[in-house]
Length: 324
Image (cartoon, rainbow, N blue to C red):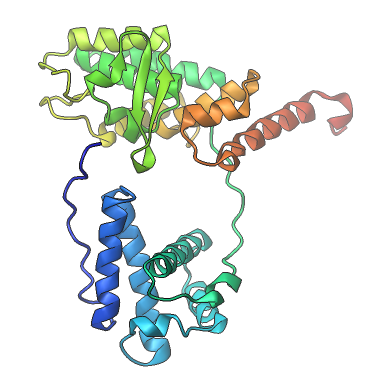
């Protein structure tokens, strides 16, 4: 297993806490990076949330927060923090994420033997509306893929082939844009499979559709840069690994040109992959494996998309559903 890259430390010097609590924040950061292999952005988000919680406690309790203070907090203290965020206008989704970060930090402290606070277990976060993935229709997906494949008169042929291959890969394999752009040439197996590294460094093997394989071969044959087997699969104009903003900008241009819905993004291709498979009768467990979801409940959101589509068709087609 590859050793995690060095991580720039999150600056906890401004956190109003005593040395023992600051030390545990630093240790937690290291544990998230080395053992959980969390990304730099994820770790920063966790540390920001917990640091903001500690800052609230310093005002709430009147002074720098010691490690021992965390284990004496009552349910009312946690609820006061949640109430402050509500009054301050924080989105419920942001507060739910912050509460999750705080829970994670307390679990870490308990595992390390520093203490436990049962009060946090009775605290409930804000209710969140069940989010429904924004998928494109089959026609909209086809229009986007065909437009990307055609390219423009001013776009070099190899870049059009590259962008088309990226989009086909997102839709054909249900990848996240970060997963697709992190691929190396060696991850594409000649027997028609693909090795993908997802969240948390977890790998999964996916089947590679012939049409996707042909698009990749076309792009690689036209690419002017020498690409080593252990080098990035998708490269930019200077030969370095392709960044997501390039793909996002191109999809946005096509969305406006084709009059596609606002939710037309590279990530919508992943949602469309799952929704279209479900519509065709694919098993939910299979879709879960293909998407790399750790929990089936995450995949089950796509059943809401399909149910909403069926109700819409029913409402438009059934004679008794029409208003006179």
